[in-house]
Image (cartoon, rainbow, N blue to C red; front, side, top):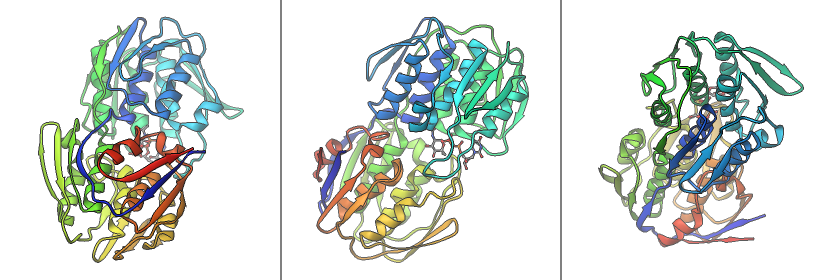
Length: 415
Ligand code: UD1
């Protein structure tokens, strides 16, 4: 199993280009199930999760070629099953559920079950499909959903679920009648998916707000579209600049998607300037501590909570980090403590008392974003850090060690 070895203490300088967003590319690739003919998608990141969804779609009859630009043809859906083997490695496999029921009239998708960051059920996806007239059954660990043709419905999500909104938005494109999604998630990835679906001929309005309206059509046609930049990758590099005492020019990003983070980082003392698709970020001598509360977009993203905690662990003063989106999303804490951080968990809050220095240690990556926080901590720690189980990082960060090394970090991957 690969490991990443980092000798900390080097400030990062230079230009880094952001890859396409994993969380936009996954639903966009799944949306190809809705059309016959060849869809072309640009700016797809080269990640393990993308390989997983390609494998899943291929098992359903898709013909797929290309890496950064992906051509995907699903003239015929040959199998409507998403097996446990693939769903267990990536929960987002659930994104095939809506498109399959909408186009093929049936789907059999393994239940994702629990994961490292909490229970993460899919009950809201299933309830919405039932409200659209699907017959949904759970048997032998699989969700089986059937509907001759889904019917438009007024759906109110109890929580603004990101993949739930995406799944039901895709399902509704081919339903008969109008579907209204109330309390929909507002993430930029949802807007990106809606734009792709509109390019296929879907009638959608309100994406990016909490009410999305979809007027069903009888068929969709293939499209060509571009995936938005990965705001979580961009945010991780911004925090890296602040932590290491460096200055970075982050290109190919969308600063509008990062407003909550930019405001917090300015409060820590960082200097940030932005233009259309570029951010210039500089660290400050003193890192002010700030409190963080994760909430759905446009609030502070839960996917940057762990990285922000690594930053706050070397700030001057006390920071309270509240996680309100997922329970149990503090697996990085015990590893940060092994590196000398002073963090106490109290329910959904982590109380972080900044320390002057972190120290290198042997640590273990536990989930995708937790792993990114450990890389950040290692970049400033005194001495050497060895991070094992880095396959978690490869799920969501494209060539992370190459990008950091080009900015001056002493980082390498060993097999
Ligand atoms: C997506 C992102 C993930 C991010 C998360 C929150 C993708 C592929 N993944 O995950 O990176 O951390 O949004 O921004 O886009 N919930 C239910 N029942 C449901 C669905 C969700 O109770 O049926 C709860 C979850 O347990 C969680 C909250 O709703 O507490 C939000 O989860 P959700 O937005 O669905 O996260 P994902 O779409 O899985």
